[in-house]
Length: 111
Image (cartoon, rainbow, N blue to C red; front, side, top):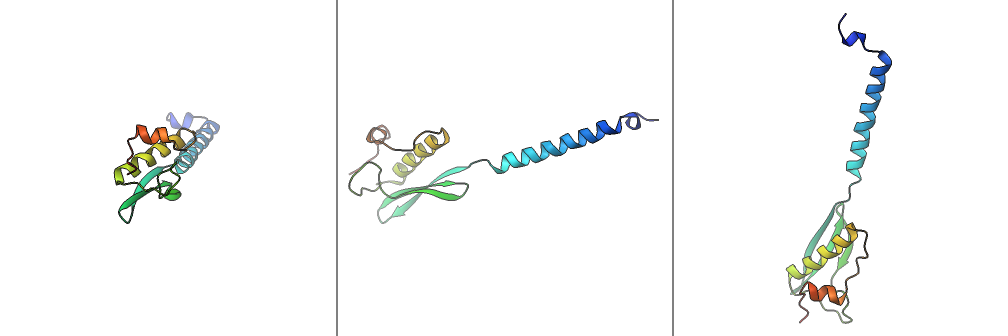
């Protein structure tokens, strides 16, 4: 009699059940992972940004936040910097609100 046939059948069933549960849990966890992306888009001569969560647009920002008049981002780089700050805050469960201080610290142009 070899060693495998000596193993208790209920132990093998339990081992199979644990394997199935682990595979299911891993698959489920991976499917619910939130993926954020920032994309800049052109508006005439200026820029805006979109934030996507799992390939779905959740924020579309065509103007620089905090300004009362409609001032757009003057460069793709500026739009992406602000969008990335918003994503960072969302990922850390913070308010995504942008302040004038944030814009100064990021050196965002507002010509």
